[in-house]
Amino acid sequence: MKFQTVEYYFHEVLLSMIRNRWMTAASIGTVAVSLFVLGVFLIIVMNMNKMAASLESQVQISVYINDNLPEEGRKEIERMTKALKGVTTIEYVPREEALKKLRERLGENKKILDALGDSNPLPNAFLVTVSNPDDVKKIAAAIADLYGVDEVKYGQDVAANLFELTHLMRFFGAILMGLLLGATIFIISNTIRLTVFARRKEIAIMKYVGATDWFIRWPFILEGVGLGIIGGGVSAFALKNFYSAMVEKIYESLAFFPMIEQYPFMHYVSMALVGAGIFIGILGSTISLKRFMEV
Image (cartoon, rainbow, N blue to C red; front, side, top):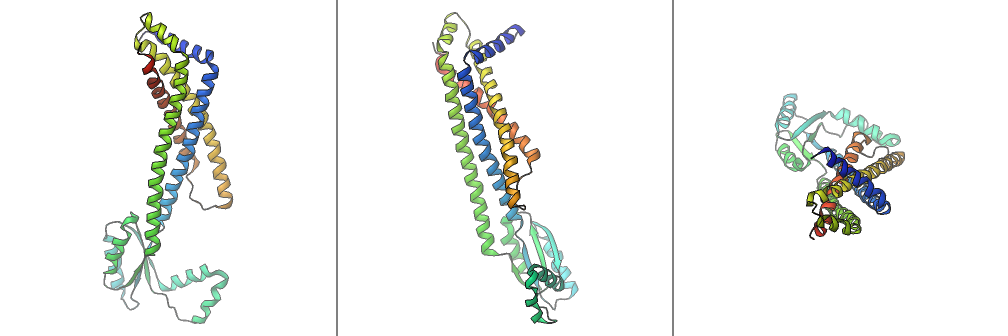
């Protein structure tokens, strides 16, 4: 492609955007608003996934062992548990340490333990974490069969409900994002189609004087790219400020809520929005031109 041709294309794009400034402004506004809404749902879904992963990672298997089990037996349970596929960490909690932690958790109510005197009803235990939360039930059953293990608990009912909830969150989040992306493409494509429709006579004249299809297409495609970059940039800027304010507001009241760190997360989201704007601009221009190229 010759330099003069490229220069002509960009000159035509700039001239067209200035000449049709109100339609250009409407297209940029539509792209910006649509991508901003898409971005808001994206960061909500991503944070829901982080919260789900955080909740799943907190599920631990408590393994209570026999008080009369010798040291060798305890080490054997630890060794065999570590050898199980999917186990990431195992921590031994002696009964004395468990009682101390219980007193700390009770705080001002720790006096109720004074009735126990010198006795300690808590058993020695292991706390086991796994890499895949879906494997908790299977690993807990395998540990329960080991010699010297009295009981295995992981909050079976709570864990099952939790896993079901997190799976539903991810499933509906993915569906919502897909539907919203489709709606965004539809809205922006139709907005760009209005721009093309307003210049249908110009396209027809160019066709009659012998201009090739691609010679006509390129200015519109580049204009769609320009609209996508500007609209995507505006939405990315607005979304960065929105997320910053949202994180600050949430941390004021929920300091330990598992939010995704702003950086580099928002950089990636911004690049995705600009990329989506370019893609949708090209797609919208291509689809809209197809009808008017048939002269």
